[in-house]
Amino acid sequence: MEINVDIGNIGRYLKENQDRFLDFWEEQIIVHYEKDNKELIRRNGSLMYQIMTKSILEEFSEYEVKLLAHKVAQERADANVNIGEFVYNVNLGRSLIIKYINLSGLSAEELQPIIEIINKQFDLFCYYAVTKYTEIINERLRERNLFISQTHKDRLSILGQMSSSFVHEFRNPLTSIMGFIKLLNHDYPNLPYLDVISKELEQLKFRITQFLHTSKMNTLAESTNEDITIHFLIEEVLDFLYPSIVDGNIQVTSNIDENIKIYGDRIELKQVILNLLINAIDAVCEEENPRKITIHSMIEENKIHICISNNGPTIHPETLKIIFEPFFTTKKLGTGIGLFVCKNIVEKNNGEISCVSNDHLTTFQISFPIKTN
Ligand SMILES: Nc1ncnc2c1ncn2[C@@H]1O[C@H](COP(=O)(O)OP(=O)(O)O)[C@@H](O)[C@H]1O
Ligand SMILES: [Mg+2]
Image (cartoon, rainbow, N blue to C red; front, side, top):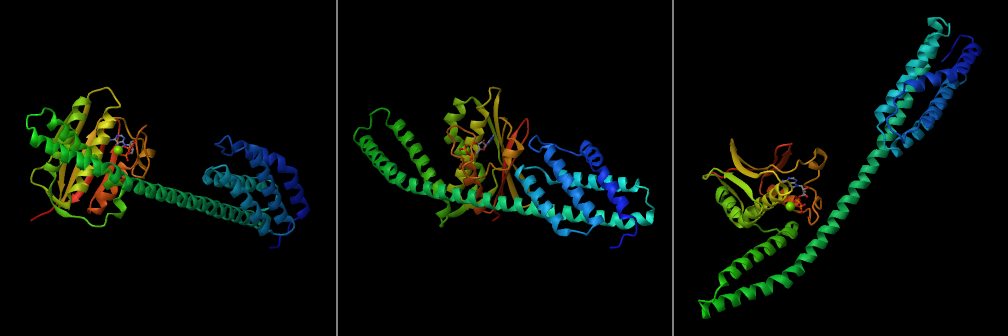
């Protein structure tokens, strides 16, 4: 591009004004983060100014702009700051420089090619910096996800192995103890406490089976689907949890349409309701005010939505995004697999699960197609 003005003059003008320009620019840029030190930004600004001056006076250098843009992108990514701020500051620089050049005393005709060079340099600078920045961030995300999924897989497989030995260590002796209790009961029908012992053992066995079920989720291929009346399934789980409900002084209200059936795996779905209710109980027990859990259903077209709500602590929006991830827990003795398993089971049974949480209520909603005859 030919510039027919006195290059010497414009060159002097730009060079003389560099510091004033940078001071002025620096006053107006946005710098949000402490880490993001102004000195570094000024140095980059000064490099850009020099490249641009050189492009106007000597020759247009795309390569230098690209190098500087890549350096800045890397710095921005390392400082973990938003690229929007950078783009703003660069464009601020562009409009200030154009304003300065306009004050240089050149005619509009003389200014035009210079402004074109400035615009082109700034466009290229933004383009290279943002592209590089996006590349760096994407690559980091990819590595992080890979790491997370690998760690999850490792932990799930360890859990699976542990649970296999768990079965042999606990379930077999338990079954034989239950057998002996039956014999005792037969031989000494009046012996006290046998019914209590039996009931406790039943519960223990149920818990162990559940745990087993949980950890083997991914390998559990066969399923036994049947028609399930949701109302009764929930009643059953509530009966099972009765001791914890009384113990925590929790008011539970359940209102589920008695006629609605869904089609799915009964044991699996019982586990979902159980996990959600245990979480609700844990949540309300964290606070002292009247503890309430409500369960109700809504019918929409051919779907049933089952909502389990509690008035415990709010789940923060950022936390809400990850509660279904395996091993996420905020509890001292939590495993963080409850909700992960719930999601797996619900989806395997053609349903959906979601959660909303505000200051008053936390609600887990599960939805399934209704089984019609
Ligand atoms: N009803 C609820 N109210 C508040 N937080 C909940 C509720 N249900 C689950 N959470 C949060 O989700 C996390 C994960 O739950 P879960 O997968 O069941 O694992 P765990 O119960 O072992 O912590 C809990 O630690 C808790 O922080
Ligand atoms: Mg749980």
